Length: 256
Ligand code: PGA
Image 1 (cartoon, protein in one colour):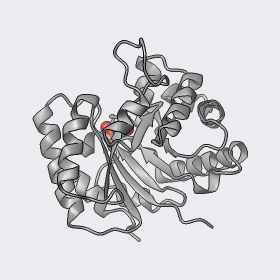
Image 2 (image 1 turned 180 degrees about the vertical axis):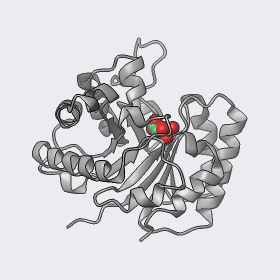
Image 3 (image 1 turned 60 degrees about the vertical axis):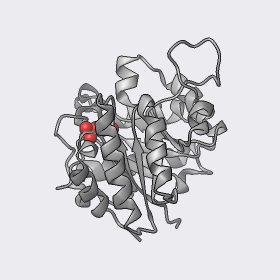
Image 4 (image 1 turned 90 degrees about the horizontal axis):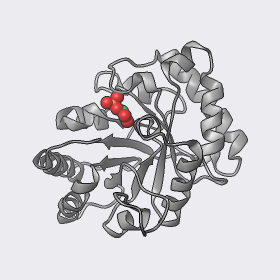
């Protein structure tokens, strides 16, 4: 049985105020500098325009990567060229980014990203030594129609390249930003389903792939989520923008 590291990843989404990003990064970095949790990795994912400033704040604290790492929220598959408005994986790696969220449902839905396109991004991220955090999850209609396992299976089969090395985040679309979370029984069941599918499609790497939950994670239930067998961490949106909430979530994680 492999021991997988635990993760708390903050997805800041399109946080508009640069000053808010800087103060959040400073507060989280100060907290991480003063605490030693060997099994836990904290990652913050600001928007593109904030990455360079946040990386400077982090390096000024001389924090080891195990304590706090930087993630981006997307990347384009090509390394460079005529792709107006896009940011590539090598560009992110060059400025000190180590993780990248890919296939978030907001990109799947609002930017019509397909599983095949996400797979290309995952390959590009890995080529640049970024750790992809690939999001999967069913919509409310799919859930109500009993299609959850089928959708998760499709997303895993089609968005992940062979021998996937990265992190998988289960984010039911209906739980994102809604304040609604699955019951712990449902979550346990879906986490087991995902692990089973992963073993089928990625026999070489499934055992060491961390599996995260995301969708309205708040400090008052994060300990319960961490206690679910097979959950290796959380991907946090809204609550990652309030430093006290984010810290409480970090403190609720198993720390080794
Ligand atoms: P939320 O977002 O915590 O605000 O629901 C999670 C996510 O979208 O990753």
